[in-house]
Image (cartoon, rainbow, N blue to C red):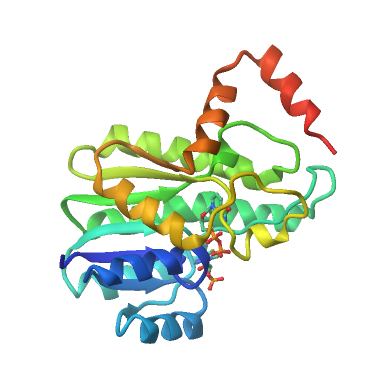
Length: 242
Ligand SMILES: NC(=O)c1ccc[n+]([C@@H]2O[C@H](COP(=O)([O-])OP(=O)(O)OC[C@H]3O[C@@H](n4cnc5c(N)ncnc54)[C@H](OP(=O)(O)O)[C@@H]3O)[C@@H](O)[C@H]2O)c1
């Protein structure tokens, strides 16, 4: 396998594990995130990869990254996992931090998608990362979950507009043990390690379909909850308030 793949959010967590998994099958990787030092360390661990540091919230930085990547030829896949998260209740979180979370998670996905699509070969793949947190509003979900619902909607729109020239995909992870979830002080059901998440993403993106969601023991029950009438689902989510 000689695919050329751009991973945004590769410096940490699921993105770093995904880079490991794709590197093991011989992909030519382009690793992006804000932390150049972490990307350089990862590239060394992988035995070589191109690093292109950038910030999805900054369109100029993304534009420069895209120009660098274009010079190396077309991409087979582009995936963004860049996101910020802070736990807390809506009435308690800092409003400036909430605005930053929207900018990185939702506007950042939009910016990345628009930079990456012109770099893809015909039929190439673009994957955005939502979350099961975007399926239904849960207590402590704060604005993070709303951004993930927005990313899901954005991916659906892009799929409608761009398929089949671009294979638009949505990745919806359940709980994965990374620095992001280490901020949570509650028990996370069906939590998995980043390596297991990476395996699920690699095989899910190789298959057909739109959404790659895992682990199914969590995602399927949340999908059922999403299908309930509000009179029932809101009664259930109200019970989860602590
Ligand atoms: N962990 C979970 O349980 C879980 C569950 C559902 C969905 N997800 C989603 O999965 C994705 C990966 O999560 P994770 O747990 O691996 O998080 P993580 O360990 O915090 O990694 C997030 C990555 O995003 C990068 N990033 C953050 N802001 C950025 C920006 N402005 N520009 C470019 N890169 C940026 C970070 O690198 P720098 O800080 O170096 O920029 C890092 O590489 C996220 O989209 C998250 O919402 C995670």
